[in-house]
Image 1 (cartoon, rainbow, N blue to C red):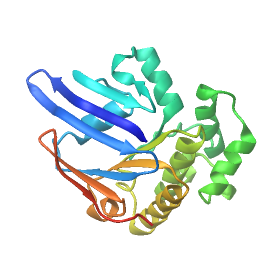
Image 2: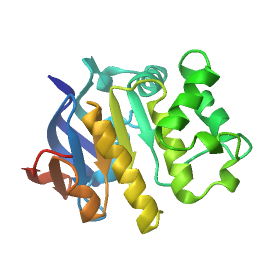
Image 3: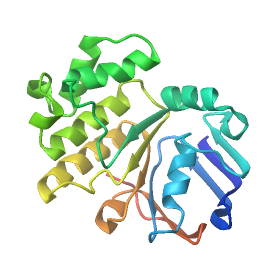
Image 4: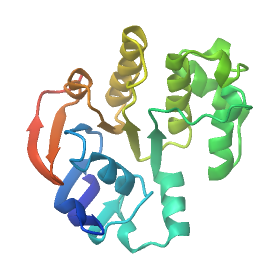
Length: 223
């Protein structure tokens, strides 16, 4: 069953056509990488899937809900309930500890639960760093907090924007191992990346050019 469907999606900014009659279906449990040069439409696509923007035309169905028909408040609710976002720039609140950053995501969804936040940190190997501020964490540790935060509300889709872009080789390995584990657990993962090594870890690789799909390849069963 498709957890995400984009049907004839176009997005224009004035005379700039970022996406052009774009079609995509992602099955529940798939790990998909989205690649392509700057200006190919990756960021636009990510913003639309993440309910941070709406298409000019076409429909976007996430877990059975057509988000292209929703208002801004409804889009925020879908993003909160259905999407777990992992950003390249982390976007952690600097004056909150790692546990508190995770609990903040719970607050906007339902009720904060410190025990659940602790378990989320344990899952990403940061149980002993829960009371540290972001400034006291390495880049790799901050990204792992972001992954824990993205998972805390059990999203339908984990959507990652260049998740290893600011990491050194060792922390990139740790983060990609986390994504492998999430995939084995059955999570649907969509990763936007410039890094071909990260891109080829996914079982399906999609390349964009000029707002359209130029390649859609099932590489292998991701491990």
